[in-house]
Length: 617
Image (cartoon, rainbow, N blue to C red; front, side):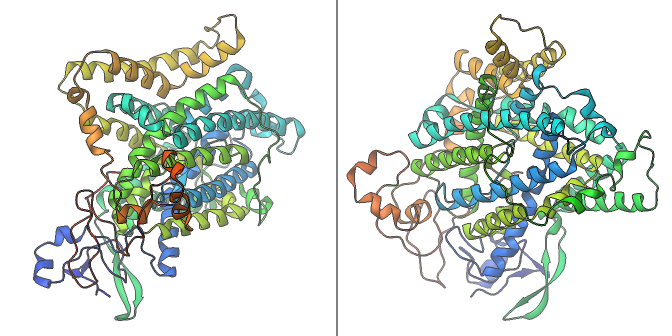
């Protein structure tokens, strides 16, 4: 067991852990001369199994990291579903998305890509969903916008929001079948051949930019509270991220002692929301915030949905079809397909990043195919259960691997179980519905800004000194903002004479990410330009599949429970895109790097360097 390494009294990793560190040098002198390198070593690689208590602690942390994105989606959808004033139903939606996210995480880690990557709701499906709900036939009745007129238990009101949810469910379920087909058939490789940075950048960026209205509406209910929330998140995530906080810990060697934890780097969003939430609570109980519903700032009070906690059940068991039989509309399906394609492209990048940060070889084609296919199944389950959304791999949790230095997939298994448990406890979802809307708006300001910037970051692969690329990106982004805004302002402008076609065009042309991505795809593939100029070569190099039929690759990516050995005995399985090739039994230990997949060395001997630094959140 390797003792804990310290420098100037501070641990070099987010958590002080017991266990073997991948590739740590033995000599203390060598350690002192390579502090920066040691800070990038893993405490546990993807196939290692940490102690059970560590799995639970880090599993909770991964759940906290994903909370912001998971909770934001049902809260945004509630506006399109006419649920702004129905906190109890919002809590049911939050419980459902927790439950489904846990199920999909367990499926992905055991049968999918098999990397430590969490599954949760996706913003790529949120944009087409909101576009669909903004169609004239789904516009919320005026009386649902007035809290005094809403009777949440009346049959009329229940039918208003459930009819919209059922239409959303059916569209997501049908659209997810396309992702299942692309994944398990191996067509994702064909898609990636024509999609480069100039398509991905406007598509992802416009997801965040198109949601500015939701952020502004929530934040505008009290700009002071929302600004405070934003400032706290920025303070924790940017200015204090390298500040460690002492926490009491226990180990066999040192017994009870204190260790340094980079808590601000790990949980900036959760800490920012919690502190703002607490301040709003204090301002509420001392009546600093106005008690008159007509006064500005009233919506920052924490007692507006006080009855939700008492009315929500202790236990709730989400089940498929809980909102009724899903319905399908052509316009909704086509819009969801645009989001599904974006989600697949984003997930492929997450797989490679997760492999680098968890000490695993780059994912082979069969694992990527299986991962995309399982994500499609996850979207199908999310649609059936009625989350109003799908599932995708969470980039935030991929970044958390680089912070905690624990890449074990057993930690993500623990996260999946915890999400399922939280989905069953109805009070958990009810708690989150009491967060004041200005606090949510402050979180949106940061979150949507990061999503937009993450899309722009894909341009690092392309030559942005090229006037060709500047034109494509600029035109795609501007069109993705102008066209949807005009269509929303003139909803009756599209009249082809065919109602179904009008609905399809309405959804597509009001989905910013589709408009921008479509122009980026067409222009990038038709305007002459070299692969180097377009960024295709750099993109492929960063995401290339350079893993081979090795012991380490098989240990990480082969199917569990002996399924790979069983399938490899049949010659026809080699033609199935998602089946792993036949491999010899693997050795114990960490995965090697992409360039030197060497056999494991015994403990106590130096191992080859194998961790590639970093992912930007």
